[in-house]
Image (cartoon, rainbow, N blue to C red; front, top):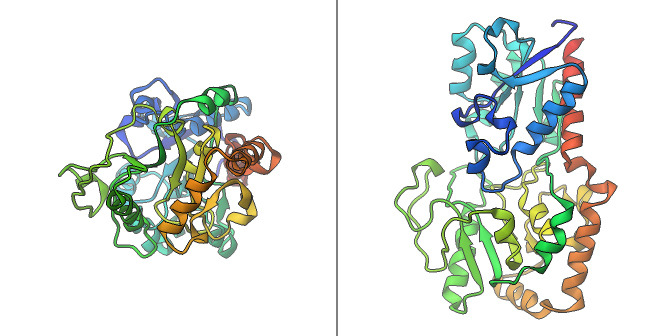
Length: 345
């Protein structure tokens, strides 16, 4: 490996992120995210590396791929590997970045033992992988950023309803999936008939579910369509169901943090190592209730009470504290740079 890394290329795996769109919130890729804080991590990384004398772009921005010193490949899959093999790119110059759990990216995890041998280092959020092999370098998922100045605005927005679930109609045959739980929650509130839950997201009330795994059409009268802006919509509810794709240790999706930063109390099903990073008193733990009847009775009982306000106060304190540092874009940049430095050796 070269001792001087000056140019890094990203192979994002998605055509809408090319032409450096993944580094631009105003790009079509940025607008398609509807407020999801995804691109901020890459913009932060670009600015961080620039201060170190390193430029980073999507690979198509380089005239000659031979000028690239190091690659970041977002997710390992056959299509991505075909790109590198067909261009005779040395896999030792490629750092794969594991972003998704097995339920979302089954090939990546099923064949991990084989493809990881091709590379000197792999970036991952999984503490088990980091512990098992030194080639796996840790970053915390999900790198999250928010605008502190908007908290009062979000906090004061009128509420449309008690609860919100904003997720896609996905499915997976991999053990540990939580997509079926999302459907159970939807059917429960639909059956109650008292209109306590609104549903937003892709793939509901439509036959078009092909892009969401082995999903089947799912119709429900509580579906409200697509949210134009996730932050604005979150702020219009008192509670948010934060049900991730799965909950392996180290995998933290953004919904719980978005709920907190919009003044909403999260109903959260946490990963097994959550106590290491997130205080228990800032969210309602889905596991603490025997059934949805008990959970619903509880959240109804604390609305507009000091208990509810205490959840919000402690959540806001946490997300502005040093304890939240692992999930910041700043920490993500430092973690990636650490791996780049190791790659120099």
